[in-house]
Amino acid sequence: MSMVPPRMSLDDHAIMPITTRPPLIMDRGAGSWLFDDQGRRYLDLVQGWAVNCLGHAPAAIRDALTVQAGRLLNASPAFHTAPHLKLATRLAAACGLDHVFFTNSGAEANEGAIKLARKWGTLHRQGAYRIVTLVDSFHGRTLATMSASGKAGWDRLFAPLMPGFTKVPVNDLTAIRAELAHGDVVAVMLEPIQGEAGVVPISDGVLQGVRTLTQEADTLLILDEIQTGIGRTGRFLAREHAGVVPDIITLGKGLGGGVPIGALVASKAVSCFAAGDQGGTYNGNPLVCAAANAVLDVVLAPGFLERVEVAGARLRSGLEACSRLHGLGCVRGRGLLLALDLGRPHATALVERARDLGLLINAPRPHLLRFMPALTISDDEIDTALVLIHQTISSLGGFP
Ligand SMILES: *Cc1c(COP(=O)(O)O)cnc(C)c1O
Image (cartoon, rainbow, N blue to C red):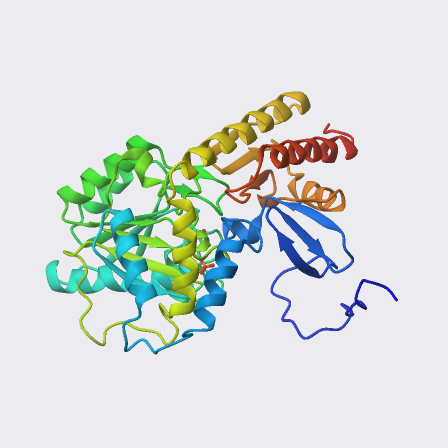
């Protein structure tokens, strides 16, 4: 009898075709490794899109979920629970802010941030509601967060979008200053490093400049740290590199380590939802909060973030060596959110060949590879990944 279970057919299934998926069925994971139902293993540098910050099936999250599942899954949002109180206290402190609203996804956290900014504008800025965001930004897939996003083509998909968002170019303080001069802007919202755009960093100087400009204009600064937060860049939050404290921070992805939870974190001055303004059936349930508390136990432990920096430096220098060897473009990003610009539109072919060789990487743009491994990836696994990347490029015959 075979150890491998019989294969489910992929010819005719009931999944809506919202993306093209390879003909594989993923079955289990362990740390940096993902296994399909045929027993093939893949070194995973995607990790559920920067979600599994502790890798696949980490014991810390498994144990926390097991204990909490046997105790209390959901008390309803109308009650306090110990996991949500503990998590909120820790997140507020780590963000340098005061109040937390839990969500089920990143998009929902950004929705909440947009609502909070609009409410604050009604109360304190004579109804100002316009929010300035950046070209190529990604803030989620709800209608409001799609409207906030600067992704090309999204203004026509599911039209009409929600009004009240203005896009300015990345790293352009002059453009932001010009928008703020109109007096009807309630907030500037941006990602410290634009993830989906292809790991495009906002410089520390520009981030500091935006903070100064928004303060001078009595306007809120919303940082979307859904991809950059929870240790991804070698600090708990990417904003720490620039020493900037915004009014609102949104979190998601790594916060749950694979379990769906997001958070909207705000200063006391901005935290103006009244009872009944905001809510959600599953929001902040004790099960997901227990998982997030387990993630924070690991990520905030002494030495963890220093190790992320060391691992990030190792991956970066290996990618730079690979780029020199094969005549490719630059490496950018911070910590373990890195991208290699290929200088040519071969990223999709590379992703597919890499998968055949047992390596999972991501191509957010046709010319760009993105790397967002588990924050717990070992030096040996980084070196193995670099060998596989080199083999992938070589097996395609290098590049013309
Ligand atoms: C992934 C992501 C989101 C959306 O999060 P979901 O959980 O997919 O809704 C929003 N902003 C940024 C920067 C992201 O990377």
